[in-house]
Image 1 (tube, rainbow, N blue to C red):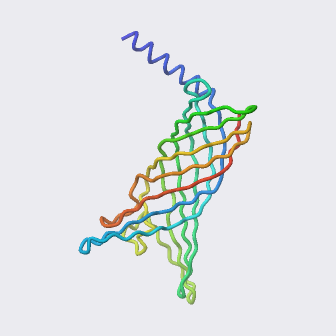
Image 2: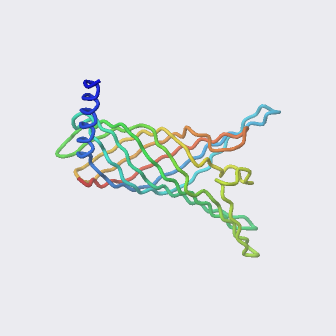
Image 3: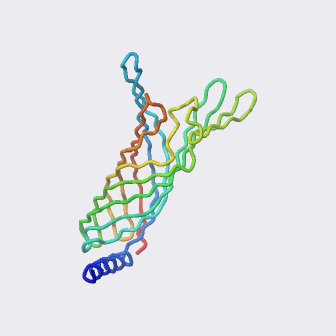
Length: 216
């Protein structure tokens, strides 16, 4: 028991040292969420596909914790993603807004090149918490404003906008660090079904590209 306790204590101490040596960074960029929906008509046994594209932006921070020397690491952090889209008909204007808190847990492998530069491959799960998911309708003639919250109303008329509040996805990407500055890009494949209907499935696929500033 004492030997086991000593091993665990040593492992915790080594992890704590790595956390102290963690490199922080702040990042921001462009993100595009492509919501791929499939609707199956049971009687006809026919499936229809549709894509709802939402442009957005993100900002957040990451910490890279070294795991084995300078090449392997564990990235944890948080970012906020905001999406907005407008459209209209002869009767109303509509504005859609979505705000998510995203928590990445990535393993990464870095390859140094040049002077104080690195090329990094990263990948792993991404956890999401929906903070806002709504649309606002404004009547062209009356000016009346109606708001739909697609977290609380699972039977909303525009079901393609409905989304589960808690989601998770798999993400992979690359990052180029040039000293204290870096560029990154990646792709996220949603593993959660966005819709409430038994005959409708929704998969979120995100593409992101941005810049990061390394703090230490």
